[in-house]
Amino acid sequence: MHAHPDDESINNGVTMARYAAEGAHVTLVTCTRGEEGEVIPPELAHLAPDRDDALGPYRVGELADAMAALGVADHRFLGGAGRYRDSGMRGAPQNDRPGAFWAAPLDEAAAPLVAVVREVRPQVLVTYDPDGGYGHPDHIQAHRVAMRAAELAADGAFRPDLGAPCAIEKIYWNCSPRSEVEKGFAALRAAGRSFPGIAAVDDVPGVVADGEVTAEIAGEAAHRAAKTAAMRAHATQIAVDGPFFALSNDLGQPLFGTEYYRLVQGTAAPAADGREHDLFAGLSEGPTGAHLTDGHQEAGA
Image (cartoon, rainbow, N blue to C red; front, top):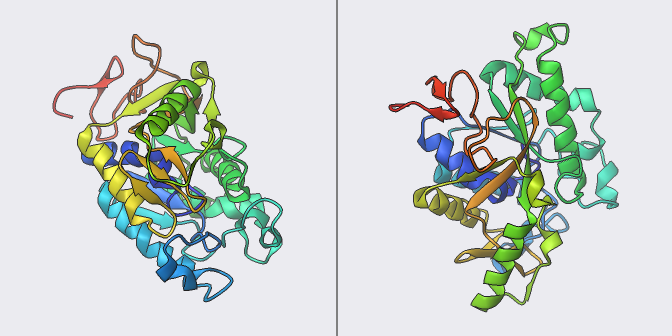
């Protein structure tokens, strides 16, 4: 569950590519088309909301290319493409405009996600923390909608017309362990990349103390390459330079090949190092229907 196109590739690109390659059914739900984003390439500046206001449809195409890079076939916009509009940054007048995602009543916005959950019947849900990672209104709302939809999807009394109840077994929030973020920025400084500046550690969404991290997904080289390709597909929003990237502020950040999570609902099944290395660890069946033993899929899954 993500707020805008590009959020999924930055936060979960390796994870999505890994599970898609393993045959899991990966579903991405994006809440808005990202109409209020700033545009990096000068030749596409006319797409901006204060000019042609055509960025949303363009970013739909970028997202399709990113999903192709990650191998994810099932992507949906919450309530359909354009149902909810990007709300802009916190305090912007766009926060309260008609159709803005931030202004949508919670249960109304949760209902279409309930329908997706009851159709797909996922074992695992990944979303943001209550602050949305960094305080963007749409990210906060995405967290609220995801958590509320998970609750409502399991309630047989809520909208039976949306399908049979489904209880999600494990819910994770995206996060970034401080020590790994600091290492990434040290590598960026040492590399001397050509970005005009370097972002601060706390500019990375969801930075937490290392002890709060419960799961880490380290993909193979192919999964990391898929993430990089997916981020490059979001060219209006992201500039990629090797193992680093920048958003429209031109401040360099590390591009992480390992992704981290906090388990907030369900039972953890950690490995010997204290962290899970499979979001399906401990479930009776894996994402492809394979039975799990000690948190790992049996051979042939």
